[in-house]
Image (cartoon, rainbow, N blue to C red; front, side, top):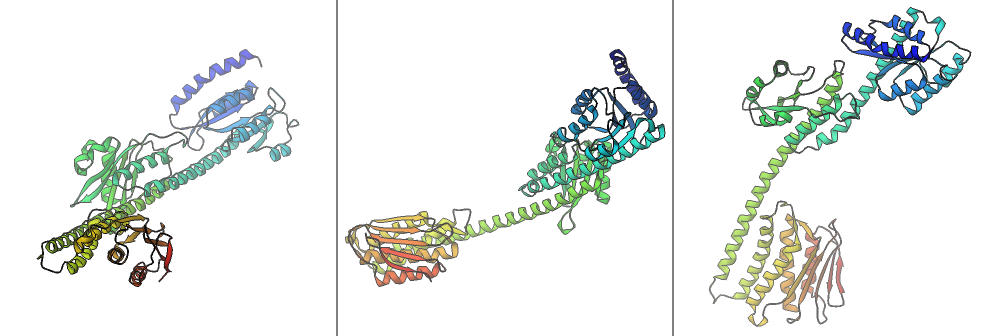
Length: 519
């Protein structure tokens, strides 16, 4: 065969393809003929011309060498069958091409039919055992009917493998979408994630990011469907009634929506889908998506599986939002209660401050200190978002300041005692924080009365993040001394309030251990 003859055939082929495309406009099977004999190409085209195989037309591609075949196969991945000769520019060119297709190109879907005119160069048994081919034929035995049956069988295998690969990719896409859907914490985020994952599920090529479609989600509100979340070009429709938006949809979209609203289920068109998501209490949410590229042979079961997963994620989100709303209401109520308690305690403190000067100030001072310690905790609760736990980082300093102020009123000759307080990871639940604050207040008051008046007092509260191994360093910076029996009893009560967490009480500048126990 001369190069001119090959060029003539290559130039003639597109015209034949154009004529064939005019006769059949549906999807085609792409079949690659790899042979250095132009006569083989001509005969194959005559046999397959204007043929419908498994409901599709046939689109033939020609390569006259293994090199040309590599170029074609590298450029496109939609070739279903390759009719491959063995001897071309080299005696084993076809066999090397097979290894390249399977190992380097990693194309496992392509059905390879080895068609040779020199079986002695490539014995059938040896080739089938060594190379990953799907059929072996001698050119002399391939009559018209056998060629058609061989190609039809190969196309059926290719179709089934593509279906399996597409289903595997779809299931993988659904599994990958689950964490993102279940992580949504608002309806707006949920609809955006759903549209993105749906576009990826329907994309023909998973490696090429699909453009996000547009869509909205309508939920029953006061007896009518209202759009609560929307994405893409439907974003401005959020908050509107569905019957106000439907006239702006095309005829197909309106029909799909009407069918889903009346009968439920999943309805799809060429670029549109609508489905009903059944939630709790027999509530049905309608999801509409447009600007999609839905293939005619798409698997509806994959879409149903995806929307079953979507329904579960939406149910989870609705429960989360409902719980969050109730927690917010509870938090507001709890903060309001603690705010009122704190105000009432402050009123009591004000009344004590305005009490008759002739009244015994020592007894009132003790009451005032205790009320002040409780007020500190309630003040913290009324100003934080998390009312379940109290951090003593600031509470200890406020309690120490109140104790010092109260003691100065009780004994003016004392002046205002210096109390240094530190706190690290000393976080307590609310039900424990109030009694612990009273105990700490009492321990500071006792220390002022029993230890040297002129020395600063240091209170350190240390705890690990797990709430264990709490250490209370309660000492004077100057002078020696040990804890009194009263301080030890207060420490023991603190152990009881901390529900068994180990407590260590240290006194004196030498860090003398006075108490190490757990209740």
